[in-house]
Image (cartoon, rainbow, N blue to C red):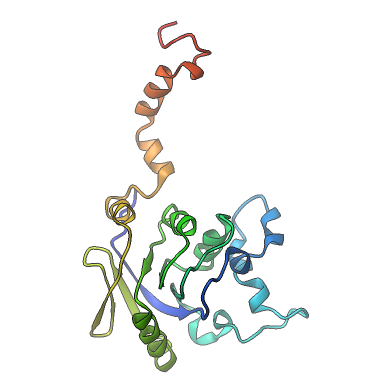
Length: 204
């Protein structure tokens, strides 16, 4: 189980509010049976013209090609609960998100990938966007211990639900690893459940 306390890297800002999961990863790509190529399809309809040429989307801007932190607006990840959306962001190379607010299921799916989605005020979001416009390669550090994002000499306060923060700081965000680490307890619990033993009871 991996503890997540600090995430550092350059940033990219995605403009707009209420960006839903269908815009993050269009539905036609959900037919793939693995998540391996999801990063290739991130914001596909916004990044490519019908003839396949590139648009002026921020992810196509060479100044932000190495970004690992995404700055977003209000209610990011709304719409359907498809886990492909955070998978596409993670597999593109983004390690954390900073936004005004996030759809609840989307933020939970981000947590299960070890990718914090932290919230800031609209004023902080605007300031970060201004910094990026003037200094495209400026780096930020999200600190979940101190609950700030550090950019240059400035500390900006962030928020994150207590349960998610606890999961990141204690390494319990990875449910698969958590189950594996407690496999004996899982088996013992299963043995006590009647429907796992054809309703015969644990000692039958």
